[in-house]
Amino acid sequence: MKTLEGPPPVAAVADHVGDGLENLGSTYPTKADKSLPGGDPLRPMHRLAKAAGAYELNRANENSKQKDRTCTSAGMPGKPGPGDVFGCDEFPMASTYEGAARAQFEGTKYTDAFSVRYMDRIENQEAGRRLNAWSTTTGS
Image (tube, rainbow, N blue to C red; front, side):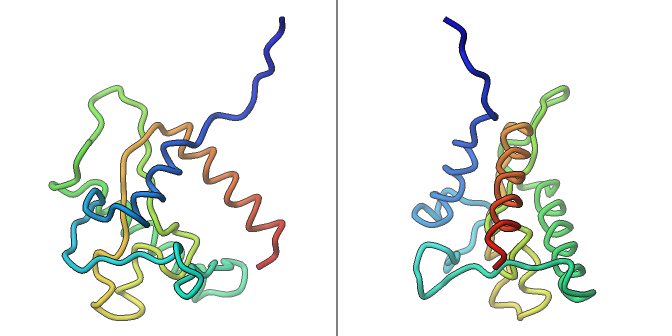
């Protein structure tokens, strides 16, 4: 019987999101009073529409830069070894106002109010493609 090839799985990304909502002690960077949006209708995430203007594009870019700085920091757990093919996933996503650089735009109470984690690069990229496709088709 022929098996159908599908897109790569995204379970590790889903686990990262789940931990960001329900198991904050397992997230990095650590923060005593960390609270992440998205698991409660009263605390939603808000998509950044990069095409809306320079502010939105800059904020999305700063989210990515902050994620990258944190992923390469000395304390980052689970760093890949030479030859490993890993990407660094972030939650909340860089495409949201609540992304890693939120403190730069909304104040220091949001310092370290995000999570990053290394995972399979292909899986991380697939999750990003799915999120982008969903965001684009939902129009909000």
